[in-house]
Each structure stands twice: as C-alpha cells, then as structure tokens.
Length: 212
Ligand SMILES: O=C(O)CCC(=O)C(=O)O
Ligand SMILES: [Fe+2]
Image 1: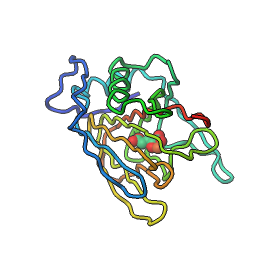
Image 2 (image 1 turned 120 degrees about the vertical axis):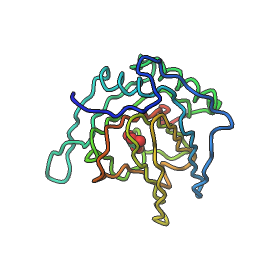
Image 3 (image 1 turned 45 degrees about the vertical axis):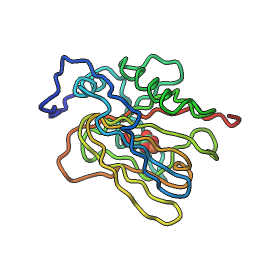
Image 4 (image 1 turned 90 degrees about the horizontal axis):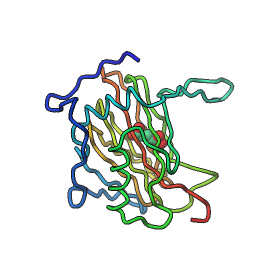
C-alpha cells in the first residue's frame, strides 16, 4: 500500500506507542436522552509508530456490500479481531485493559473485540448508523474509539431531534460512546474534499449477547 502519511514533528517512529493516564483527564459530554461521550485527546503517545505498524501489519480487507440493486465497495478498509484474539499491536491490549479498568467492567459492557477501519483518503467514510451486533441492541453499551493518523470528524446526530454535534478526532485521541448513544443517536464520518491523509480507527466493543 503506498500512502504518504505526514508524521507529527514530535513523534519518534522508533519509539513504542504508550498510553497516557485516563482518570480525570477524561471529559464527559452529556448528549441527553441517556447518551454520553467521553473524550480523552492525546491518549496514545508516539502514535506515529502505532499508525505505521497498523497500516503495514493488519490484514486489511476491502469489503463489498449490497446496496439497493448494486454491489458497492465499502468506502474504507476493515479488519476485525474477536474475543481473545491477539491484537496487531501490544499497545492495543494495553488500551483494552486500561479501558476496562477505567470503566470498571460493568456486566455486558466489558471491551472484548477490536474492529479496525482504514480511511485511505477524504473519500473514505462511514454513513450514519448506530452500532449493532446481532439482531438488536436494546440496552446501554459502550464503544471506545482510538484514532490515529489524520484528523477526521466524528458527527453524532440525535434520532429524535436531528441535532448534530461534531467531534474532530486527532492523532492518538480517544472517544467513548456510552449509555444509550447507539440507540438514541447515530454517528458518521463524512467524506471530505479537504486534502487529508490516511486515518486508522480502532473500535473496542463488548460482546453483545442478548442475555447479558
Ligand atoms: O472510524 C470511526 O471513528 C468510526 C467507525 C464506526 O463508527 C464503526 O466502525 O462502527
Ligand atoms: Fe459505528
């Protein structure tokens, strides 16, 4: 894959990525209707190295989806790691553990899987959706997103009022969607005509069994 990535001035590609603290540095945003977001900018330090490793080492897949009467390319590359999988970088295991420690492993909301998305250019995107596993999601849950590479904006829209709020996600930032967010709101990463470099996001999710 030939993608040029403008690394930040301060990161050292030979330095291992590390995690800063969570704790009080996490900012809670109340979206109403039982939905909330937590933001922790700059959680992953030396995230240039993480970007480079994920870009090179992850078995990226180009998915195709049926849409109306056509089969279309999904506008991003993806990769998914189920419970107990070895993740493509040890800092991702540390991140999953740190998130579980921070949130205290509430029943049914223990982070166990990692989904990865690769947005190659501003043409790559994800349309409005609420995350769903299985048939339905009818209770509160959390989805934690770690973003590396170019900054892209995650938009969050209330299903009832249509109100949209936008959260720019930069290199090494953490955003956690919690409470009712997947039911009462949708989220999306819009395409952009701005010249943006590639971005990789890692989404940590619980396993949503119906009985949990
Ligand atoms: O890339 C992101 O930050 C969001 C990805 C997402 O919403 C998803 O994969 O469900
Ligand atoms: Fe999502």
